[in-house]
Length: 236
Image (tube, rainbow, N blue to C red; front, side):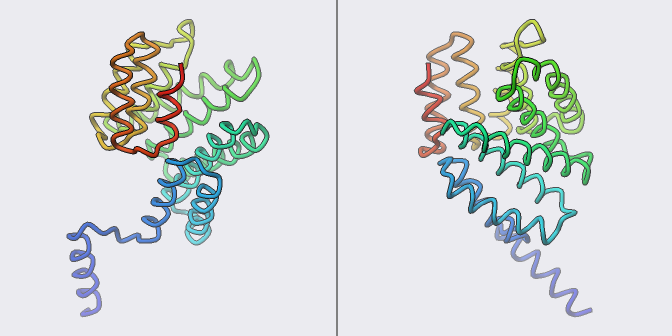
């Protein structure tokens, strides 16, 4: 009884100081943050090793499996940036399987559905002429489920923004809707630099160069080392 009371007081004390009870996950998330900021292969590999260790220890933990899928998603970005298509495709298949597994563990995990939708989008970009017809409807389906589960998630809104931005107009693409979702994502998570990058990409595609520059500057203010923000700002 005393031990149980002590444990409760311990958790309340550390929670009050802002510490997570899952210290191992916090460490893994810090590694993911470094990897996604730099897209450095060694940093991403270190993050993957750490998160894989968590999933091996707790294979039924949907959050751990989701974070593993996130790491592999960033590995796809890193491989693609270095024009390594085969490793990118292999990492993508891993990420898709992991996102599907996270959903199997927790069907109400909105962000996992959004991530799977994003991964299907990458599948189209890396695939041939027929991948759009196969995976486009899957993107819409996953994002619809995600929005139904949690419409006020920044992750969900950003994924919906990408769906509308990257889909051809003839198949439902809509720049105005994309910008609406990106703006909502930045409002829901104002410290997330990636959402501002996507807002900048959307504004530039919409013809608003000053607005795009402002969004890119905000992203770099939040994360000055972000390779994604720097490369996106420099792109034309």
